[in-house]
Image (cartoon, rainbow, N blue to C red; front, side, top):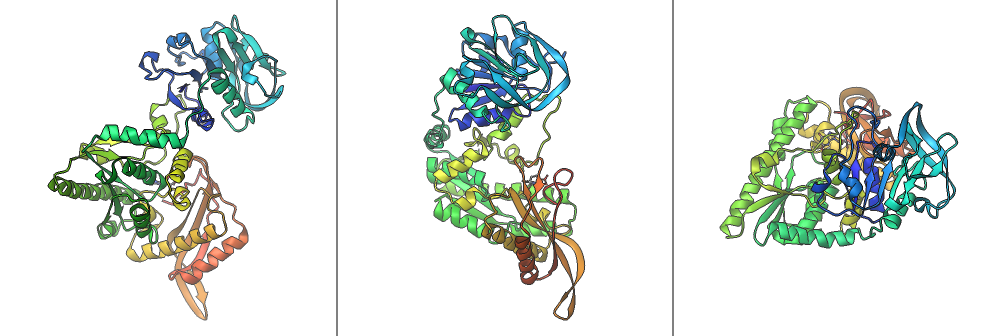
Length: 517
Ligand code: XMP
């Protein structure tokens, strides 16, 4: 395991990503973590970048015990300055913030740059730079203006670099990290999803024990499906998956999810059809946040009722009690909660309905909490889950209720569903589904005049949304070829009753959001 100590840089999670891609397991902890509290013995340590300068009064510093771990240490950007700060080098503020591409020249002999060209393009993002090299260190790379962009003290295995190898703008960044992690730290590249499955199944069995029962909500999304498949592989029918039909899922979605989970993946599934309850409560409600609250609270209520029914049945059969709740939490959420928050703390994105735990007194079990999204997808594929599901776009918990602007009625749901279905079908036919991060049709509450045959129509508008994004915090609208938009538009207008106009949303996020509500 490689230990990454996070000083709050916006890039820290990418360090973890890159190292995992090398097949090496790593964990990220806050920079203020006490080494005595680290539960594993790291093969190497990486100190991340940071929005701070080491001389700031409240600048974070590592536990000094790091320096006596006797394993290789690599400081990146602020991490380099932290090395200089603790080894009595001098860091001086640079008037000009260096930000962007730079060319560096590496000096021969460093294991960090083994098998790399002498000249490298790298990505810089920092205000301070090293003006004096700490004692015992030697420079191993320079630029025209900075003599110490990379330094090392080989006998102590301490390395520092000013640039960011974890971003794709540093083309040889992964190779450099490989040199450090596999070459210098001698970490094993044995982190594969195949080995993960077996280990995780064993771990789940050990936690759950021989009789306890587990419940978990599934939505048809990749995270909950993969988590459910792992759980059912570990404990079979002692895992009870619950799908709540809230009446605002997509066309035929409930049926498809049922088919896939129950029949194809062999998961013990209960479908709770609560569409009337949800739609009843949504009647007359226009405000998006109210819709979210109603759906969130009703979901918890229905889920708990279903779980209680399952518990009663299980108890009657003299089997164990329900003791655990399965959740599909991923590593980015975990990182979000353990990261060191610098002055520019990340903006929170939406989270799915919480609240289940407070009521149910169950212990949480999170088999995906060490994984990134693409690792979950790889895992899904390995466990025989269809590509369609593995690559499905994210779908919000409140479903199409927040894609129907204004009141959500059964008639509006039908129109929105039908239009969305055609839209996604055409995107898939055009082979664009995987290029787009998220796409959906929104039903607007305005009516516009149209003409059909020799009759005047006065009907609703569908707004098509498609975005490309990495993290859903910022997004660009997708540039469709016109002929595909044309086809989608004419199909929706011809086939969906109640719609006579289709528009394409060309707003990026920010300032617009991905959803319309
Ligand atoms: P926005 O609209 O904020 O959306 O740009 C960013 C991402 O979050 C999803 N989203 C939600 N997901 N419950 C969810 O589970 C919600 O209430 C919710 N609102 C937005 C949205 O689909 C996009 O992926």
